[in-house]
Image (cartoon, rainbow, N blue to C red; front, side, top):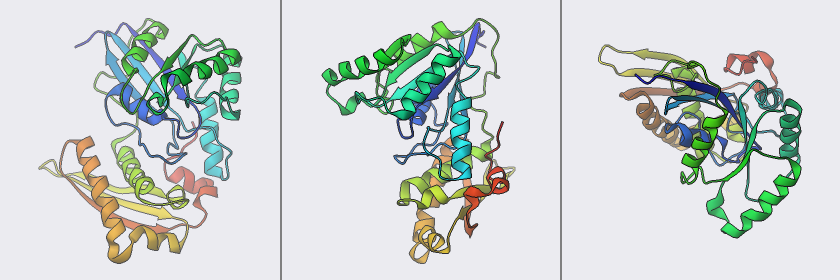
Length: 298
């Protein structure tokens, strides 16, 4: 058993779709946060834990800052703002573009206000020529004196090790915050629900996946170790329900197959997954339903 001598909390923040969840998964080496190429994929604060070299890193992946259009959107922005407080370091993720927009400036103001150590992470460096990074560094360097600037590609894993080594400095000495075998604070059924939601984001177009919520109604283990998983997908319109189910149930079958494969990988056992689709109009503006679907305010 490893003796933990240092442990601390590190928040990943940035605008939607900048790669926070991809980096969280790359840092801990496991799929904890769901990933899609659509903005506002992460709705809750997700905690991921990594133990190595006598250190326990506790990463918080947050929803991106965006202009909220619903009560759910308000909740997500509130989670993003609050998560910068009471941590040992902040990673501000930005695109490799020499322009700091409103979300980045808002995070920098919050970092300054709290006086928390911050590292600028320029993600997606595999998408631009290396010489383009200098202008990005200069742009952000003029706005704040970051402790370090780390260019990386979370998707390809480039620069992730360097970032981890740098973060050790910010961890205070002290015992571990979480048990050794824990990789996330998300209950297993919540992770399963999020995996199903990831497949909706992957396979459905435009606004439809943002209007969906996923509820696990049954999560039980047989004596053989097989898991029975029953899931209800809620959407906002009857027309959306038809699209999610697809012609002769083809789309729902595809969503379920993709989700089951990922859930089996996560759980390490065979899973029997059954899915239903129901309509709940305007649930994103109903505080009771938002809480019911697992988006509790702290």
